[in-house]
Length: 114
Length: 113
Image 1 (tube, chains in turn purple, yellow):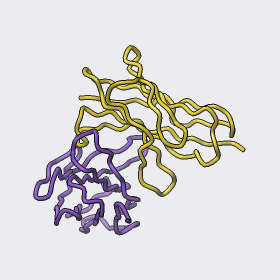
Image 2 (image 1 turned 30 degrees about the vertical axis):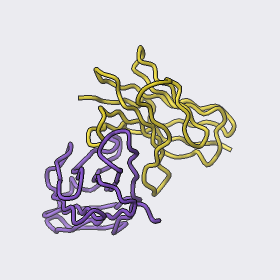
Image 3 (image 1 turned 45 degrees about the vertical axis):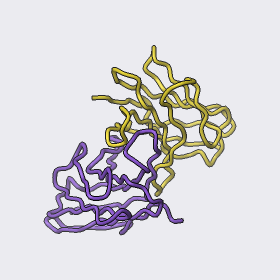
Image 4 (image 1 turned 60 degrees about the vertical axis):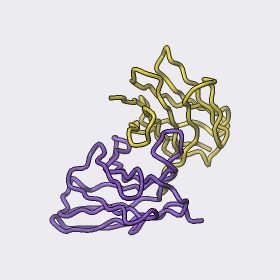
C-alpha cells in the first residue's frame, strides 16, 4: 500500500518549456488535489477533482491544467513554465471532498524554472 | 474567506521541554481546524483535527490542541518534546470541504539536545 505517489521528485525546466506532474493513489479515494508550497506562504490549492470525471479550480489555477485520468490518477500540466512557478508541488487525496475526511499527501515534486 | 495565522516562524526548544505552537484563525462560523506536520523532504501528515464537540483534541505522537472560540485560537501542545519532533508544523482552517482549506505559513521547530 504505497498511499499517494508522485513523479518526478525533482525537475528543472527552462522558461517556456512544458511538463506534466504525475500523481497516483491506491486508497480508492474519490477526491484528489494539487497544491503548491512556497516559502512563507503555506500550501495553496491549484486544482482539485471531487470525483472521477470532474475537475475544478482552486485558489491559484492560472498557468496550470489538470486531468483526472481515472480514479487513481490526477496529473498537473504546466504548458509554458514561468519562473513564478518554481515551487514544491504536492498531490493529495481523500475519500470524499468533505472536510471530515483526512487528506493524505504525497512526498512532493520540487520544480525549478530558470 | 477564512484565514489562519501562525505568529511564530521558528521555535527552538530543548529535548524534554514542553511545546506550544500558536495558531489563530479568522472565520465567522464554527471552523474545521487541523494541525499537520511535515518532516524534511516529506509530505504533510495529519496530527489532529477539530470539527465539533470536546474542545481539547488528542492527536498522534502525543500532541493535543485546544479550540478556544473566544480567542479564535487552536494552539498545539506537547508536554515533552523528542528530537524526532523537529519538523515544520502547519495549522489549517476549513469551512467543511477539503477544497476550501487555508493553510498557515508554518512554524519550524528545532529541538536542542
